[in-house]
Every structure is written in structure tokens, then in C-alpha cells.
Length: 272
Length: 256
Image 1 (cartoon, rainbow over the protein chains, first blue to last red):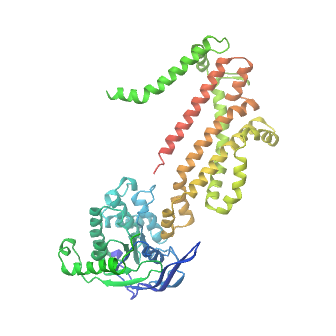
Image 2: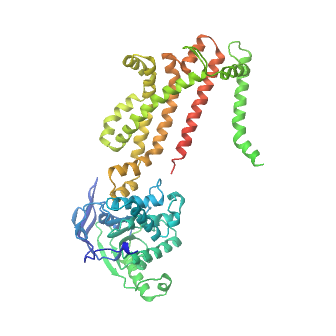
Image 3: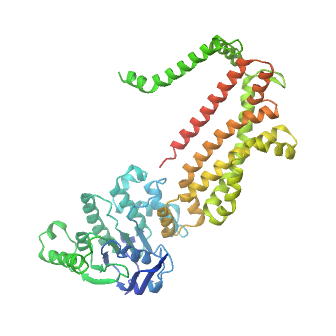
């Protein structure tokens, strides 16, 4: 597990300053995000929460480099984000594994890209195996995506992102398409993996419990258009966290209440 | 019990259909002197297929040679069409400019009967055999271009996002994403192409002559050997069916 620990501990890992994002539409420019300021420290677990259409996925795509901001500065480890790069691993909502490759080959594709120039084939295979072992999928290495369950696919997606040793792990509602039990199981696993690898994570979610359980800070976004960061809630629950113990924890419920209040009172959505 | 259910569901209907077809054929031939019946045709077919590879004169060869020659022409014309049509389809699908450039030409030439190209082939190649291959080439290139291009255009955005996030090189994008994602569409194009090619070869050979199943049909018409014409029709149909089935089986292996 040691190999996954970040090597340089810079102060501000991800810096987002004054970022604005607008899309060109037929009715003119549509401002999706404005005045976004966020600094993320190494090893932090950040969740972005908000009603649908608030631009939380847009913000994640900006950090990933899949979109370019119309205004503002975005830095990752003091370097400007000019496009997608292997320093930011992305886990997609719908796993996005290539169906014609085995789990092993799906991860290997990422490993090869990042380390192929400097390492031998044996080392690349080892990295791939290690990444799959991290998500407990060694037994499914040579299966194809259609042969495994939705939860397992999402774990391969996480392994693929982690195998690149990214500075930041970006997750776009990674467990949104899974049933509640599988989701809880994967959340527990993710907590262990993040603790073991000391990863910096930005996760988009609309699940309040998930946000409180996993996060160090919850970034709550106002409703769009021209959405921005409404409040940032620091979750100071001690780690490692246990969902059963938290079920009766007063402080947990207070934090959960704060998020609910933001979402359903301050930013209540008008009935559509 | 299991077999009886399988028989009733899957074997009985086609067998019944074939039986009725042959019965109808027998009835029609009953009151007609020129149309041979099923039994007469069957005996003729047995005689024909008992010695498929004789060679008497250039124009009198066994049915096996005729079939192989036709298949050979289809194979060459079709192979050349694949060699050119599939890469062209990839480029048309990938680059919108190229698509807009070629769309009017493809739409205009596609509905033209491939046989209309035969005189051009004869003119350019000055020989019957390459002209027939040329006709096959023309008839099978369109489905390959169109289906390959469609496959490329239907590539899910998710896969392209994966490519961007992983920062894959153009070559890797092609071999690991674009090609496998397009393969099922390509195989559909190939299947349609070989169907058309096999359809067209009979007509092309009737016009060009030489050894081949199409020319054989024409020859037997001149000999007024109607049994052989009927046998040729069945032979062409069965070979077409086999080609199609083979490609469907191949395509099944690449369904994701």
C-alpha cells in the first residue's frame, strides 16, 4: 500500500480561484457556475453536494480538465489545469469500463499510459494486480465487465483511477447507480482505501448520509443558474468512522441536520 | 420429451414450409411439360454433384469449378472493397468535414445498380474477369463505408471521456476504443456487402461469360436444361445462406 502514498505534501493541493463557467446556448451565454473559490489540502476528502442542476458535476469536470473555465484560475499541485491528466484520476458514475477488455486490461490501459515509458512489463503487470487487489478483485481479474456485478464494475473503475497514482481522485456520483446495500459496502471499502493510500478525494454526491460519513468537508452548492458555493461544513468526526456507531451519535445527527437544513430550507427547490 | 418440444418449436415449422413448397412445385410441374418436377430435378442434381470437378472443355466444367470460380471473384472483389471501404468509413466517421464532402457522392452512386458499372470495367480492364470483380467491388463497398462510418459516429461519449482522462495516444484510442467499438457495425456492413456481392455475381457472370455459376445458368438456358437452372438457383441460395450464417455467427462473438 505504501506505493500509493502521495510523495510531495504541498500546502494547497487543488486551488480554485474566482472560477466562472458559462455555456453557449441558443439563448446566449448560460452561466452555470460563478465566483467559485475552493482550496483543497492534500489528504482531504471533499464532497460536493447540491440539488440536481446546481453544477456540481460541472465543477468536478473542471477539476478533471474535461471542461475549461470561462474565467478564473485552477491549479493542481501549483500547476495550471490545462486539460485532463493522469495526476487527476476520474471515477465515472456509470463506471465507463471498456466492455471488450478484461478487468485487468482495463486497469492495465491506465497503468501503461502513466508508467509504460519508465517501467518494465513485469512492473506494469504488478501495478495492475496491486490496484485490483486494493479493491479486492483479484479473483475477477480476467473477467469481462459484463460478467461482474455493478458494484464490482465500480470497484474496477476505482482501481483504474487509483492505479495511475493520481494526486487527486475525482468521483462523480460513483455509487449513485447502485442499490443501498452495495452502496454502503463500497463506501466502507472506499474509506479503508482512502485511509490506506492517503488519497485526496473530491466526490460529487446527492446523498446526505454519504457526504457526512465520508467527508472532511462538505461543499454545499446553491441552486443554479449561476450557482456558487453556499456553505462549507467541516465534518470533525474522528476517523476511522463506523456507520453503526454513528447511527446513534449526536454530533453526526447535528452535522446531518445542518446539511439537510441547507438543502431543504435555505436552498429549497421550487416544485418543478 | 425435451426433443419433442424442440422439434415442435424449431424444426417442424421450417420442415412443413419446405414440404409444402416442394408439393406446390410438384403440382405445378404435373400439368406442365417444360417445368421439371422435384424428383426429376433431384436425380439430375445427384448426377451433377457426383462428379463436381470434371474438366472437359473451358466451357464445360463441373459444378464445383463453377461455384469455386464465382466464390473466388466475390472473394477478391469483396476483399478489395473491404481494404478500401473500411478505412474510408473510419475517416468519414471521424472527420465531419470528410463526411460532408463525400455524402453527396455516396448517396448518388449507392442506388445505381452495380451492373451499370460493368461497361466501365470492361473498358478499363479490357477483360471479362477483372470487370466482373470490379462490379463486385462496387456493389460491396457502399455498405462497408456506410456502416463503418455509422459505427464510428455512434461511439459513446463515455468512452471518449475515458480516453481523454487517461490521456491515451491516438493509436491507443484507435486500437483500444475506436476499432473494437466499431467492429459490430463493421461486421453488419460486411454481411450486407457479401449478400449483395453474391446476388450480383450471378448477373455479372451471365454478361461476362467464363467459368462461374452465373454463366453456367446462362449456358444451361441455351441448352434448355431446365433442371440444371433450378439446381443452380438452389445452389446459389444455399451458398448465400451459408455465407450469411457464417457472418452472423462471427458477429455474435463480438457482441459486448
